[in-house]
Amino acid sequence: MAKRKPGSSKKRSTEPPRAQAGEDRVLAKLTEAEEDLLRHMEQGWRLETDSLGGSPVLRDLKSDEVIRPLSANRSTVEALQKRGLIVPGKDGDPLTITWRLRNEKK
Image (cartoon, rainbow, N blue to C red; front, side):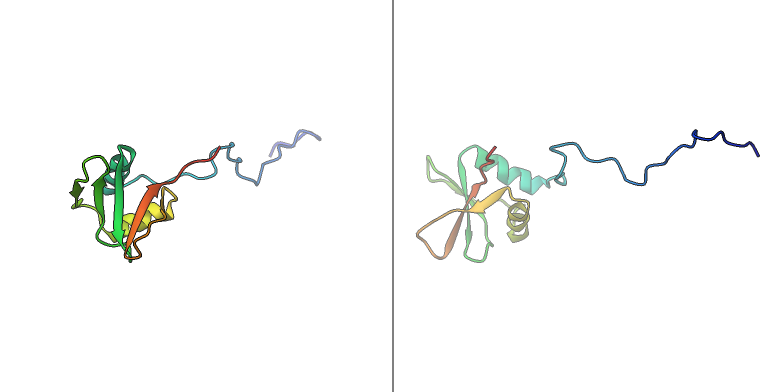
C-alpha cells in the first residue's frame, strides 16, 4: 500500500449538491387531459364543476357554448388543484364551482 502524504487527504462531501434557485419545486409531467383543460382555460374558456368537483364542463365566455371534455373527470380537476395550477373562483351559485387559473405573483 502506498502511503499518503500529510495534508493531501481528499475530503469527500457527504451532502448532495444543493439545488439552484428556482429548482425548488419540479412538477411532474401533466397528463393529456390536464394539458387540454389548461389550454382551453388559457384561451378564455371557463371550467365549471358541480359542488363536489365532478362533472367538469368548459364554457366559452364569448358564445356561451358548453362542452364536456371526455377525458377529464373529478380526479383531473383535483390533480390540477393540488398542483396549484387552478383555484376555485367566487361565484354566486352554491351548487357550481367555477375554476380559474392561478395567477403567479413575482
